[in-house]
Amino acid sequence: MTAVPFDPVPMDALADRHPTGPDWLWSGYLARGNLTLLTSVWKGGKTTLLAGLLRALADGRPFLDRPTAAGSAVVLSEEAPAVWAARARAIPLGPHAQLVSRPFVGRPSAAQWDDLVT
Image 1 (cartoon, rainbow, N blue to C red):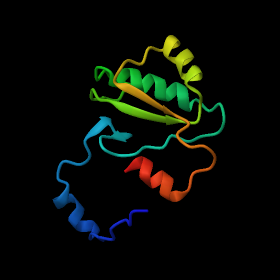
Image 2: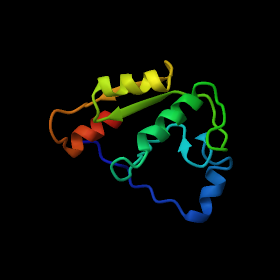
Image 3: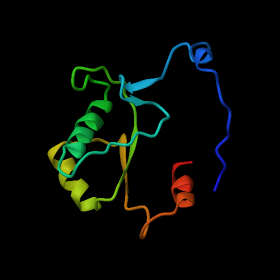
Image 4: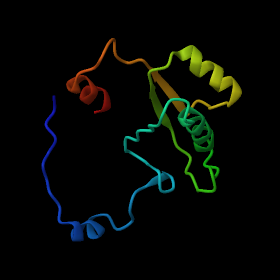
């Protein structure tokens, strides 16, 4: 497993280091180059939200009254590709959105997650 560098930064220096803030794909919620986890209770609407967002990212149209930028996404899901195929028929997602379905056999270790996201 790769060690995470420990490089503390004084909070009052952050604005100088990052004068423009994040490069938002979905303003205030999803930043380019970051990992974003959508979590909620079962049947809470996570996948419906994600499908609508992915559709908006195709050409950068606003989503839920917030600006988006055109971009690509990789969706990591525990659901089978057939489930996503049905969704894609209902809400066309486009080639900018890619699916990684069930990337692990069994429960992954911390090292396996690290390898996947780095």
